[in-house]
Amino acid sequence: MRSIPFLLTIALIFSYNFSVAQNEATKEASESSQSVFYIKEVLQDGKGDFDPWNTQRWSAWYNEKGEIIRQFDVDTSVKFKSRNEPWLVKISEKFTNKSLFTIAKQGIVMDGNGLIMDVRTERQKLPLDELYALKKEPWTDGNELRGIFYNLPQIEGIQATKIKNFTFMGWKRGIKINGTGDQEQHRLIVENCVFTRNKIGFYTNGYNTLLRNCDLFENGYGAIYSGSRSRRNQFIGNTFRDNTLSQNQHSYGDFIGDTFFDSEISSNTFAKSHIKTDQRRIGISMFRNMGESNNLREQMPHNNIIRGNHFDGYSVAIHIGSRMGRDTRNDITDEGRDYAFYNLIADNTIENSTIGIKINTEGNTISGNAFTNVEEEIVLQCVFFKLENTTINYQKDDEVKLWYVTEDYAQYSDWFRFQDDLNGSIKKEEKLITVFSQREGPSFSQNQDENFKLNPVKASGKNLLEDYRLGVPMATATGEFSLDLPGNEFVAIWDQPISRINEKDYYSILFFDDKGTEINRCGRSEVKWKEIAVGYFTKKEGEMEVAAIPAEAIEGKYPVYIFDRGFQVPKEILYGDNENPDITIKTDMNQELMVLFQ
Image (cartoon, helix red, strand yellow):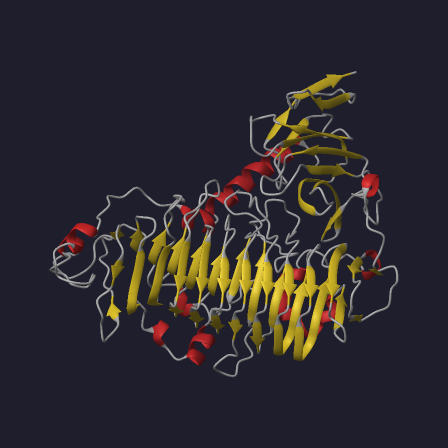
């Protein structure tokens, strides 16, 4: 960050790049306003169970070719009529909705009664070994609809909504759950369903859902995607197998946890592949999306429980922080950081796998997991300068491998391409891994030294934000920077570069929670920051903003830059013509910006 014109140019380029980038969460969450066609009145005709394939009974939903032209809005409990063969759903080209069925009332039951809803393309019907070999190709076209869509706010005193006894084949999403993130969602239970040969089987941006006793196998991009804003969901007693046929993403697995939190993944079976394959197979992958279409992923994967699951035959059974180090145009911080913390990985059994548990982010807990015939039982990878505060208990007789540089994992490097995108110039002697282990701890691949500390003194008080390389920050501030975390957060700057991306060092503004765990960054700069202030400078509520002034002139100027959490590019530049180096900033009692000149 050398000059104001440079910054403005970058901001324009940055904005354009994200305007053309795909925004999965926005596309998934948006629903155009459409006319509704409820089914309750038709079902009162005395002609029996729900049979939406009956073109005469449901003529308002069909054209003259026998193709469906609009979604079914389900406003009453239904049991589908029994069929002896799959329902090969035919959708009209003029169908304008995004889902075949939308649940329109809380507390109802949709009982598929064993119904198979099949919209697969011919390539999606190929044998499993051929699908693995074709990778993305069978999944780049085909049906773009969701089988069932749900997005209803909670109503007290009404029983949970239920979806059960369906098989979904060939859908973009078999079931899709939306959520606004700012209201409680009505309880939903999905049970005894099969998701197979879909692009993604079950996708949620919502919360308060229980998925149980379902089979999820042979889906293209993943079985379950728990995405942006999803929280307080439970995934219990399900069976997973062969769900990354496309091999599209190094961070995708059977279960994909993208910015989800306060959720439970327990008592599930992650089964051995039905074919012998050298393809990458990941059971559970957890990461924070780095941003799309210039939007911040406000949440981070935290407070999740992964307990009592069984994994057999995986490349990596559980991968936490799987996008750490990734170089992508979607990274609005431009620092390659992933965040996933306070997650518990306990009492899982992992067998016949290459890597059991791999952790790339700080502040997670591993406890009581069992390994049989696993080459690397637990791996801690320090991608950038440090990986701190991992707790490992009740793993006696297990070994923890410590990875610092690519040479440490050369034989597996193809699986972890994101982890060495941006950090190649950080040497092992510059890195630090810390672990806390007080009860039945494991052994480690190296002894304690300058790079590895076991049970160090925990930072607190004035030293809470101390960096092991740079010491305590030169300036800190406190404010509200995550509405989903308790208390206020800290913001800090150092008088030396805190970041290194590829070969270059940068000054950045770092955010921490009230326990001292880093949660984000902003304002990556080649110029040192002199002062920061936090408050509401361009808005009145929500997450606060950071104001920063440079320590050195940028083309002879000392502006005030306004940042949102997570953004490298400032949202606004104030006092762009100021040449006075004695500018200083603070906030008043209303958290509004005060700019002073001496």
